[in-house]
Image (cartoon, rainbow, N blue to C red; front, side, top):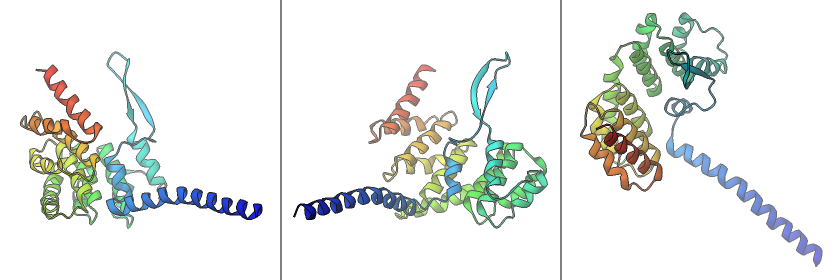
Length: 254
């Protein structure tokens, strides 16, 4: 009887441990399916935590901040796909790779290097089948003073906006990322779309990204201060904190 009890207890403990292991894995998979965000999208929109860093210095020689060495990091990512030639000619050819992530990373690297000779190829990449490659090409071109990608992203945002209004949220993260690029470029055409995403209750991350984009456009469109203020009562503390900090900075600089 004692042996049976011990066996039963062992089975119960084993079941509990197995459940604790499987539930997080299952939730992680469900979150990936629900968000439907490709791997390279995360690297496009999120800070790079494992990238090499380099010190930046002021004119007096003293360090001012730490910067991510994006060129080194992008090369390290491309090496994972067997890429070893990082010349401009090679990177331009890689824009035609069958691997989406390779096209994405190559476009960003060309932009970091400000390779003017690659502009025609990057303009062609604006029509890539992958939105993330289109965004990367737009960012790369913007670094070289070329704004041809703006129209492409604006057209995508119009389509994504209609889907959003219809309750179809599959492309909401892409929608948010495209608006981030537009805001970085100083495009006030992003403001109506950003106001819409402030009400997206499924992701506080999207709301926080939206607030940051609105903040970047404040100098061109001061009316967004009202929209930022409206998030002081958001349910998530990080969203509330950003709104509060932004408003305080505005008050200090008046």
